[in-house]
Length: 399
Length: 80
Image (cartoon, rainbow over all chains, first blue to last red; front, side):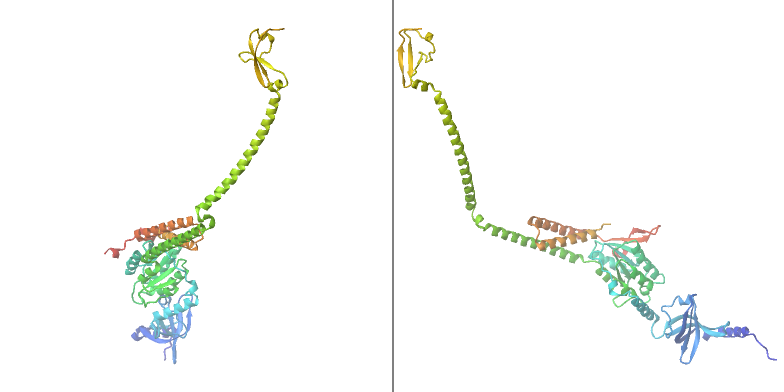
């Protein structure tokens, strides 16, 4: 008599058989992704196939979180995990714990993918690039407080342009927390307007060490920044996503400090040159003024001071003449009046009376004798005529 | 918020303006002399700013209310 088993019993049996198999418990499988689906739960479902076969795969949210690229249909990958039975459907599948694109390193693939995505969104476009301030007042440096990168930047800023102020926003620059911290610091600097220029970066390291700067959170924070951002990651050949999004890419942190500020040696030279130029301009101006003055001085009226004086003398003469004319007029009017008055006076003169035949007598004191009572016999009196006088003696007095 | 860099920048801008005005040559001579004097003083002031400047570094942390709190930062590596 054959024993009959329930479906689930068989599935359970197979499940245990699979689990006992070491080969299936940790296996790398190469294949091409198909039927890829990302569920709202965060779990990824897909198949791996090659020319002759296919295998169902699932990657749970907890493992998928560590993926450094986005799986897509047609992508050749190497998946790692265990093959086990799913009793409900009676199928076996790969429980994928890690996956890397086949052929290229997964970091590189992730980099290319994110680069493509951000480029398509226009985040690298040149007209998004903000101009850097010529003389930064405050520079926010977002990097590790302990790194050599910070020290290098401070040394160069100190040497080149110590007029600026540095605000350090210390963050972790590697490890899982790094991207979020860097992105948050960039947004924080913007929210509180702590600076007019941001430098973010770190010193050199492996591609994994620099990975935070290939994170899209950092990329978007840089893209959203109203404050211009200089990226300064690793060494010259290291290029990160942050470099593409930043307003300026510096090859190294030291280079970022050099690009951020003017060099005071140059500034001193420029100031000196401006000072000299100002002096030249002033001298030129003075020369022009002098020439203008000379041109004016050569005008006829100013050629010699004598001309000037003669001009004035002529004017003076003219005034004098006018004055004289006025005086003469005044004088003649006075004279006429005088003549009239004289004539009046003459008419009333005693001499005029005498000339009509009258005479007048004066006493010894030359007083006019107005009455016969004033004379006595024997007194000498003078009788005046119009043309002379006679000294007479009174012989008798009649009344 | 005024800083040394701001006053330096403003001075350089004013200096450029003075140079431009002097270049145009349409200012009265008396004003030109005044501009020259001002320019010379600006050059001296800028030079002094540069000569006396020391890089100020502060560390920003999130204060209790979320706004930035500043603490002095000493670059240890620079001292050693």
